[in-house]
Image (cartoon, rainbow, N blue to C red; front, side, top):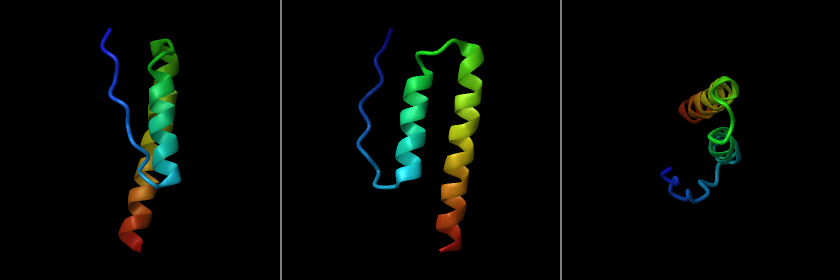
Amino acid sequence: MIEPAAVDPTGQPAVDAAVEALDQAADRPPEEQVGAYEEAHKALSQTLAAIDEG
Protein backbone atom coordinates (compact mmCIF):
# COMPACT_ATOMS: atom_id res chain seq x y z
CA MET A 1 0.00 0.00 0.00
CA ILE A 2 1.25 3.48 -0.84
CA GLU A 3 1.45 5.84 2.10
CA PRO A 4 -0.06 9.31 1.48
CA ALA A 5 2.25 12.27 1.69
CA ALA A 6 2.15 14.33 4.86
CA VAL A 7 0.11 17.50 4.51
CA ASP A 8 1.17 20.71 6.18
CA PRO A 9 -1.54 22.62 8.06
CA THR A 10 -3.27 25.24 5.93
CA GLY A 11 -4.10 27.63 8.75
CA GLN A 12 -7.80 27.19 8.01
CA PRO A 13 -9.24 25.08 10.85
CA ALA A 14 -12.14 23.73 8.78
CA VAL A 15 -9.85 22.71 5.93
CA ASP A 16 -7.31 21.11 8.26
CA ALA A 17 -10.10 19.17 10.00
CA ALA A 18 -11.49 17.99 6.64
CA VAL A 19 -8.06 16.81 5.50
CA GLU A 20 -7.54 14.98 8.79
CA ALA A 21 -10.96 13.33 8.49
CA LEU A 22 -10.11 12.16 4.97
CA ASP A 23 -6.82 10.75 6.20
CA GLN A 24 -8.62 8.82 8.94
CA ALA A 25 -11.34 7.65 6.53
CA ALA A 26 -8.76 5.87 4.40
CA ASP A 27 -8.41 3.25 7.14
CA ARG A 28 -12.15 2.56 7.34
CA PRO A 29 -14.19 0.08 5.33
CA PRO A 30 -15.49 1.56 2.06
CA GLU A 31 -19.08 1.82 3.29
CA GLU A 32 -17.90 4.09 6.12
CA GLN A 33 -15.70 6.21 3.86
CA VAL A 34 -18.59 7.68 1.90
CA GLY A 35 -19.95 9.66 4.85
CA ALA A 36 -16.50 11.02 5.68
CA TYR A 37 -15.98 12.11 2.07
CA GLU A 38 -19.39 13.79 1.97
CA GLU A 39 -18.70 15.66 5.22
CA ALA A 40 -15.28 16.78 4.00
CA HIS A 41 -16.79 17.96 0.72
CA LYS A 42 -19.42 19.94 2.61
CA ALA A 43 -16.84 21.57 4.91
CA LEU A 44 -14.54 22.45 2.02
CA SER A 45 -17.41 23.83 -0.06
CA GLN A 46 -18.58 26.01 2.83
CA THR A 47 -15.06 27.27 3.40
CA LEU A 48 -14.65 28.21 -0.26
CA ALA A 49 -18.05 29.92 -0.27
CA ALA A 50 -17.07 31.96 2.79
CA ILE A 51 -13.83 33.01 1.10
CA ASP A 52 -15.75 34.06 -2.02
CA GLU A 53 -18.10 36.16 0.12
CA GLY A 54 -15.22 37.90 1.91
